[in-house]
Image (cartoon, rainbow, N blue to C red; front, side, top):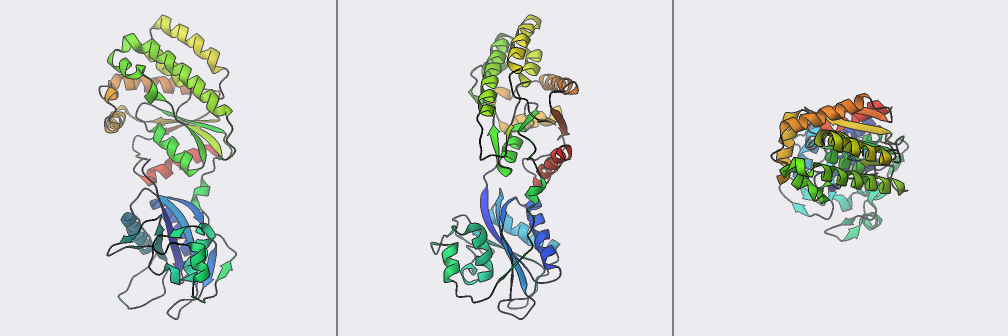
Length: 378
């Protein structure tokens, strides 16, 4: 997951179906730019500086991996898509939708196209009031005052009327509340860690990530598979059992559910590929002694991707010990997972083919995957 930046965005409309215009803008921002964390009330306010219909105004808090300039470009695209036509007329004018970047954390930006903090925000009650609803303690980086202080000092005497209808946050569409423990699995390079991390952040989940990087036998295994296979698989089994048992036993009252980028059963799948007959039989006995005591996920997601894409992903992430990985080995892993999932009855399984998807770099693909999960869990 890339570095996230927090944006405060102001929305306004005074033409057509004003509430629908605002909701359409919220939906488009979520679909194209990033996750919406909070949305203010809607306030009806008089047009400021020109004669026109009253405005509906709101503010939202947005998290995005995009730069401020890119966010501005996307906001302008959304305005155009929703029917705003900018004219060359001087002064203010009525508009279907108006989207402005008000704050970008503690940044001060002064370019030809973008000024942050918004230079007029401290003078506009229709910006400060909804912004105060969701970010009263945020500080104006140039004036060194909180939003709440700016609102109290604002000389704009406009009377704002709160509207008793609320904008819907699209993030609420994806409801994971019925689940306690979700496991995301996939072949090497499928992106399970990236997806688990994104979902955990966006939906307030406790995140469990496999500690493969700490395993001293993994690089040795890739250099000498036969010699280190049993040692590697036993070390992974012990570590996975301990980690999943410890983490799932510790209740986090501030998280909605738990999500992991692995489940313990992967140990049996990999060991069947890597170990000879006698070693595997011994390993399997030990595995089931541990497995019976492990909490099972109530939703198990398998990310299926073809070998060519897996090799591309492995090369891209650049781990030295993975670079000479044989495609045949990846195909055996895929086959092992699919064979296991066909007969699985312990938990609900959802297989998602992501061969043509790039949820790391494409928000559209990420939201598509969330939709696929939601379809399974309605």
